[in-house]
Image (cartoon, rainbow, N blue to C red; front, top):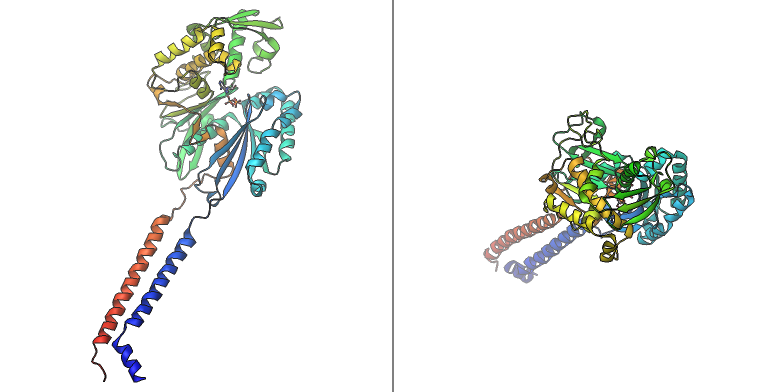
Length: 495
Ligand SMILES: Nc1ncnc2c1ncn2[C@@H]1O[C@H](COP(=O)(O)OP(=O)(O)OP(=O)(O)O)[C@@H](O)[C@H]1O
């Protein structure tokens, strides 16, 4: 017995080894718990679906975001887009049930793409823009019937349907601006924002923040936001009837006033000839009050392909002179001085991309030359050169190019300098530029008004900190116990 005690007192190493082993186990356990407890959860996603019921067509967008980050700063991104076959829902005014029917194929696709266990919680929105705004102005019971048909169809799917409604022009402009700035990370980081230019089929929107605008002049153009702790006073205006298709109607209506049977249109290619029915042209409230007296059933629409003359006719659909404010864009609408960068999307992009003019460092004089040369190309040659492009679009690129230039430079007052601040965009980081994402972010409260509280240390920093502290603690324990055992081993031995 005394021999054993004597041995322990002489040799402290077995106890030291036991302490080291226990220490190592404690540290490993501590670090493992810290790592597991704080590890980001495996990536589970949530989904949202928005139907953009535009004047020319409907598109369905599916968005997804990491499940643990909703109501916070989780990156929401577009995972799928489905183009609905056929025209926009406003075209089904005489057979509303077909509007509901037209959405079925894309909705079935959405049902396949969103995981089944998420269906019931996935919000589904339908927002209609200028086509339905016009139909509602013209015939509100027809527009109600279209909405009823669309809602009936959407209710047959297992998603959390939040309703179908017409967006105001202001909402369309403001949510387009939110989308562009959210995707470019400008809101969360509080960077200077980018303006948004949207050219649709029936309306066009301009939205930007200007230090010259506080909302006091023309308050109807002001939208205020508080996002991630920053206040924004946004200027936005939507011009109904100035989307690409309705602007063309304005242009044709203008020309038929002078030549009701045959118009020789400088915005169409030489050799172009098409019969156009007056009822088709005047079916829109944008032009219905301009129908010539005693007009024949149809007129012959021919082209002469002259860009300079085209620009003159295009200018005639704007009023650049009347303005009761300090500054105006056109038609007497207030606009503050332009400021900063702009993203131009929808038809701005489609048209400038086709004409190879998305590079805004190309001087405006050169841009005009390119459009001018396209306009002057005979129609047969244009079709031969672009066999894969929809004929309707091909015929309209000359007009659309001239219209975009006039709208930007004479309408919104972009100069040759500020034109270089425009970027023609289709997508930002894989998501389409347009109002739909901003609309969903707003309705799901996914952009907080205040900047979210961030943990004092990032995850990796936290784990490293715990590890270093545990190792330090361990070393301290070892050093102090070793000194204790060394002292013990040096004590005079009991014999
Ligand atoms: N590839 C293309 N080339 C030329 N024009 C195009 C192309 N694709 C679409 N367009 C036209 O661009 C215009 C804008 O399309 P978009 O889908 O943005 O409008 P919309 O949502 O139907 O209209 P709105 O927002 O006014 O209701 C429409 O006139 C459409 O016909």
